[in-house]
Length: 149
Ligand code: SF4
Image (cartoon, protein in one colour):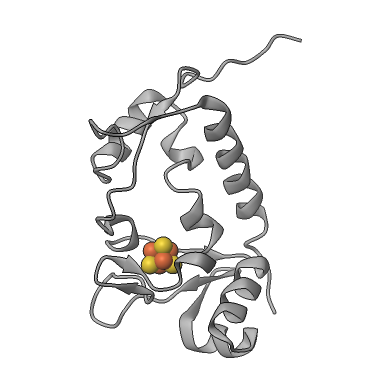
């Protein structure tokens, strides 16, 4: 079988500058899997149901984090920092290696207009294998986001 070589086979440049831009702005949802809910509620010392009630909204057939009232900031964004960083959702962990940003070079360029860390001059070259692993994790997580409690 012919091996499919991704267009980013030589790697892509990215480093998080801590600007917080990926945690705010419209439109956008941070969707959660059951695993995300378990991890985040454990991290905050509450039950899953309490977490869902306090920090999420139902969107179609899944749960998404709330925004801070009156803004598009994620409910867990404090200043420019994530207050639940160690337990953050898989969607956040896998940024910027999302399929919609990786299909073609033009998608990556468009993503770089929203995120200053993409193609940042000081950014290290991230190997293709790591990018593909992260993208697969992101895709698996998409499938795990449709559920109800
Ligand atoms: S959970 Fe944390 S990393 Fe994810 S969008 Fe909210 S503030 Fe950002």
